[in-house]
Length: 548
Image (tube, rainbow, N blue to C red; front, side):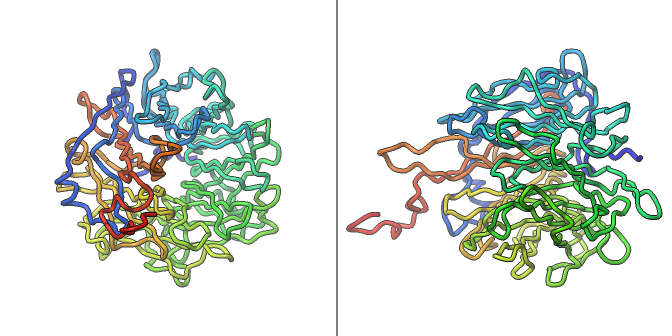
């Protein structure tokens, strides 16, 4: 089994020598902000005046991953941020997760969650925190935290990978214990380079109204009819149970040669590199989307695809359901499939229009737009009563958005969905971590496109980079990871309704502090205040005689 790098074309994992620390800063750069923003028709947007920054410890790469959930049931969402190369007191490069509680005005740190604190072993290179997800797996009303450890040695196999589930109750996360899962005891066999836990997704796949967990294993080898297909990839499904949490009952190992999945596993397809779960036809249960950025779809080369596996009563049931394959070789899909496009590198789901069904955004960061090598792209597919379809699909590239296009921008390498302007339709944040923003090499950018009645609009958008919050530096990779949450300002009864717009978390894992890549996470807060659109400046939003 070949050992893959943990994430291709992404930061390396150097050693570190310090424990983590946190700094909070606010920066006001309104003039520059307005100069670089195309104002959305909806008015209220993400702002920069009260952004919050968290800074990691020496070479910890804080911001490599993040996830959002309410761990203590107080009504505010909380934020977990991965720093997979953080040190413990005894061992370098173990990895850690920092957890912050949401509150009325600020996110407050509650400490580092390390492998030691949740009952594991300190292991250099384990990459604890390289992937994160949240869900309520025991149905107790409190979100639990899943931490990917894709570099973990299992049964002597390097980088076989593991996850740990930290459960929560009314006291918050239980840092003193954790449920460790790997391909022991789950189906499959741990092998060097499997990278179990590389990607994670949460949702109800079994129609029991309890969250289930999908675990990506993009380095899994699959034995084909004629030869071993290295790094073909696989996904483990573990089902949640009320009162029990995740159990091994009914767990599944799915790959492209699984009976009932009418595909072929090939070397380097990396099935399971990315994952998402959503209601694409509006019915329970949810469906699983598996990204295979190395998928061979038509002709020679590795082009990439997104494979939708329908959920069913009791769980995924390939023999009795038909998968859907989306790629740039699918009839009606915009773009041309080419070797190295990496269609399916990233995935995100949301309600981008008024259709009532969930929609799917697919990152294609290897797309070479108009011959510009790996400038990147994003494809958007809309849900309908029959599920995801190609009708009305959108092909989003930087040139269409009037944004500078350069080789290796990797537009679409990260995606996140949230309602940033409180209009009831989801918006789409797109990371281009290798963009040379304002000429600074690999400093990175994030483009935010707004949803509406008809879907994602290209008429109004925002472009964010580190200049709004600090200075641009070579190699920052602003936008390497993205997540969304509501951390502040709850509804106040009996007063003007305070907005329920969401905030955007941007990971900057190679941001340099103290002359090493300590990393940073920037929480960009939505700037709408009222939910009546009056804050947009449109005086017609309120009637003269009878304001709504």
